[in-house]
Image (cartoon, rainbow, N blue to C red; front, top):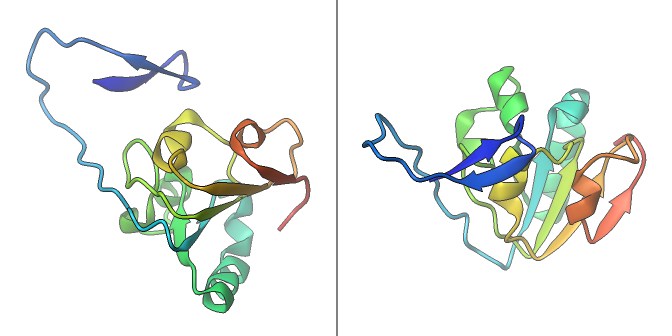
Length: 135
């Protein structure tokens, strides 16, 4: 199994000597010929703007786990370790900190564009292009 370790900032391969009680099924978003807009808790007040951007670009809206856990988005939109795998040609991360839970789900994306007001957010380590600003 691959699980978050060290407060979720590292992924570790763990050998289980017993059968796990439950498992998470992650599905692959798969289509490399599309754009996905990922919204994190840091942009919870900008979801409407992100939806408008999706309509303009013909993109799919997805969400971080924290956004889903706090009721701002439905589970079927969640990308990450406990959500779906996103592998679009362009992934725009808006207000996503870059927690390892989310990175695991979007690391197969082609070009990653991150928009975050925190210049030290871990998402910028994975992004091809970074914008330090509010959305």
